Length: 216
Image (cartoon, rainbow, N blue to C red; front, side, top):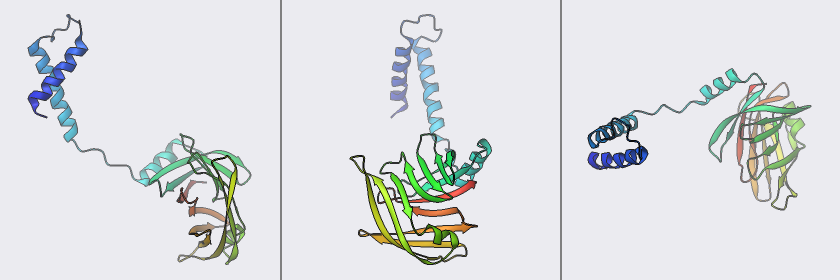
């Protein structure tokens, strides 16, 4: 768009805004042209200025820890391509619900993902017979049953056979599961039976969620 045309359009907008206001001292063709030129130059200057860089995960975590005194986690939804901080909003024994301001929630049992809410295609509940092996750092086999809400409002279970073993790094346990033509791998960093860092599969559509405890 040329400067002349831009000024013309801006003058039209200014004229429309002025309406019947005859007390405005600049409401003359020359005054309106000057205002329009100033507006265009300001908009172009703003567009040419570099935008502030996106905040890093470390900066986001630091800000969340500063403003929220309660338990916090950072959750990365890999399929959705976003990372967000969640604050604990409820606790029942070892079960904790962490939620964002827009009411998307993860339900954890001492770090183990057992449910989601508000994300779409939500996990109703997960029952993993391998949980004890993972927390104890022992190898073995078991089943993982993931229940989802179907379109009719009923729960639909998906059952997977899983193998637990040591991961590539000290303190990391991996769980390889397969069934129904699907395979996935969960990774857990275990410390004293707790799981402060993990990458867990939340379902065929939600995909993987990385979870890091910011404040226990």
